[in-house]
Length: 400
Image (cartoon, rainbow, N blue to C red; front, top):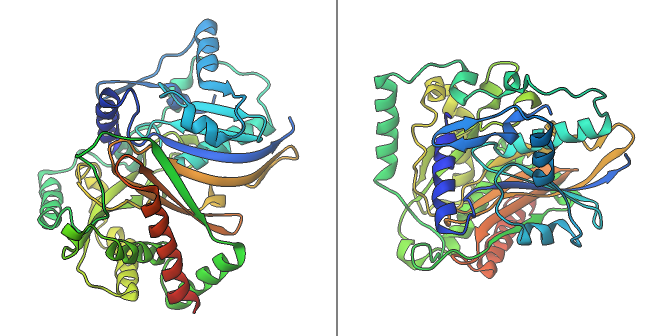
């Protein structure tokens, strides 16, 4: 394992031991599809300690694997499956005929958000044009390498590790920073929940145009709106603190070919990096600062790519914000003449330990925000309030 994988394996095992097998950050995607109708062995790997283990199956093992990881559900929809499904041992796909939905669930030490979209793409491609002759035995040649290998970097030097340590310490003295009202540490985990906010096509187009006119990314604008929401609804004990988080950077554009394609979908190719914003700050001050950070961090300091995995234990109270960008860059709307993706309504994670996330992406010309949280720690009404405030701020600052 490398990069973020050991971190997710550790927190997954810890949360599983404490919470009846439920693993922190199991990632999922829900697709609504019209369907008329073995390239990723990593999804069948298991974890032993800090190593991934894959065993080429014989016929009996293959049938057992299929029976346990491909489930046709009689539920009314994918949401019902999601809330009733048992903890998974390996990547699992559920097909819900009544709602014509697919639900993928995969441990985060196996895959990241963009990887999930690429995996969906590979599956639907295979579904539209099935291979006529499948052979097993050489799958190990297609196992995705660790992020360090994919980037072509060696073990970080002592100087690079020291630099990462200095970056971490300059951030850590301000952690955990301003945050929402949460019961983490005071009560047991509840159920994981995911609340989405979908912007209509016309509103999405207007937001994108306004961001382009102002020279900022949509991600920076949404993140700035989230900061405004957190400031408004902050835990009173943290109101005078700065905003402190770990921003997430997609490393797939930097990895060597062919690891930057759907061939390596089942991989964890991103890294967190510490970020601090002094408050108070206006929406535009926040958006411009975030835009500079997202745009220039790796460009100004390329050696950051050789420090991946050194800052995995960052403690934060606010939700992290994975940016999946334009989903159609990874997942097509149609596959051949017999598969159509009608909706990508949710991409999120199971929050068990209390570290919430909100995913940002567009699909079919609509901006979607998915806020993943645990209802034992945060009230659903509070999450609704954050999303409503974000929507209000974006409309006021970009569309007024």
